[in-house]
Length: 422
Image 1 (tube, rainbow, N blue to C red):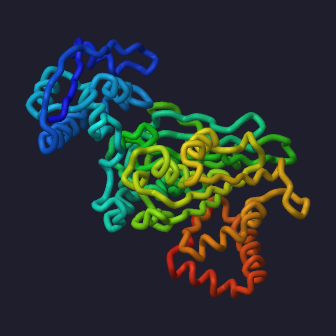
Image 2: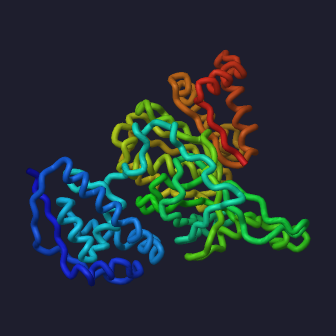
Image 3: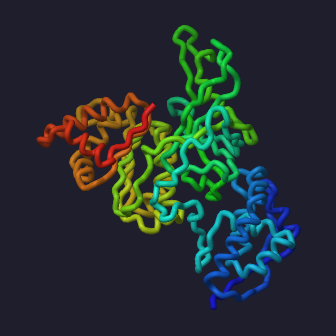
């Protein structure tokens, strides 16, 4: 017999207040109702009932706030789920707050949250990865939850983190991309704008871990005109500026999800991942890192390898998601590693600017050793990064007496080489 406790006061009022804006106080406190239920089938059935009931309620929560207050309120209100009969009674009484929270949580015996409700069976099986569910002629309409500048004042350009609500109807996996169709038509021929692909910058569970949102990391594309000595608005990036200018509630036409080349092979939990990025190429790796070190996923529970991130940006103000990455590194020092290449603040071994290939070269022996042992290496960012990377790798290979072309062919054949550049 497992002791289960449910606490609920002012059911109707509490349920309504849970959907107030985030800065509004939630009138919900722990009460004194205690219930007993057996573990096992009843527990699973209760969760299933709550998740069904939460479908509509969770959507309302997301429409009214960036991270559903219902999710947080439910965690406070529900210590453990009880029997099916009592769950149905609660939902019937209007305890939507409980249902909305349960949609995002699977409660373990100790009451801890798990992100395991969007997994394949087994979790590493990639046969059911969704691809191109929504196409250009019939795109999905998402709604912006929030748009936030995430770089400092001295960064070169503006980069924004955009959270989009898809109500759980646009599933994706870490490493995939979303297509975005900017509104309006092209000036030259009056046709709709072409779709632009953006790597998804969140895990499949989204930043709020409900499975109802996804995030993009977008740099605003501008063109500096030397004659005007200012940005030329006629030459700005149509889609990036649209996304960076969005506000909560704005609609976004989306396609995809696209691609399988950047997926993580999770069957072997000892696999090392070497992640190389410039700028917003960090996006897929944020999804990887959240899945392995932030969320309580099946992959995280068993992961014993090392994820090694190399990120190249201009300066410290241009670093992306550094606070998240440092927290993950602190919690998992043996499994997560970070190295930054700051081109305007650091110098390489030859006295020049420190670019991403220079930083990787500093650890060439270790990188090559990991690849020989089966590690997977990923590259994401501007396509201009690849010639420098490949020249560096070729030089190191030759010093080691390796045939670079044969070596690279071997990595590709073993599916250890993953490239997505733009």
